[in-house]
Image 1 (spheres, one colour):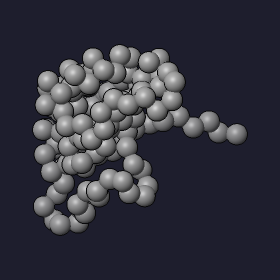
Image 2 (spheres, one colour; image 1 turned 90 degrees about the vertical axis):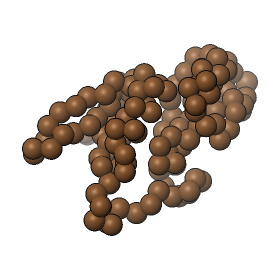
Image 3 (cartoon, helix red, strand yellow; image 1 turned 180 degrees about the vertical axis):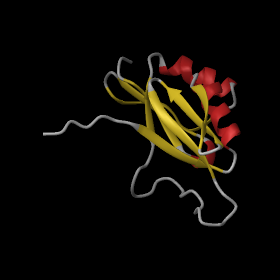
Image 4 (tube, rainbow, N blue to C red; image 1 turned 60 degrees about the horizontal axis):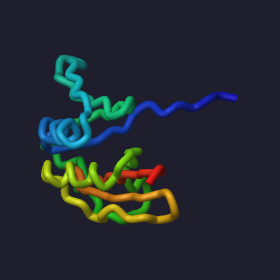
Length: 128
């Protein structure tokens, strides 16, 4: 049987540079710039996970982002330790939380914030 390993997350953004800087500023993502077929490519390394950021072209073929919650892929989850301090730090950087740190069961606290283009990002602290 084949083994599957996670490869990447692909985001589309009307402002790829701004999107990349958000993930860099908020979560310490590393911005990776390369060339592909004569055009600059913008990727991120976020905690070892590859995130590709593609520009939204002005051809009108890219739909607007959905409003959460919706069916299908709903959010990105990031593991953290010390969620309350991390949430305070992210707020100081301008993050918009859609759910404050909340205990969902003993030892597990979560919070949600809104990323560029309405991407929902969950913080999970399983050692709370």
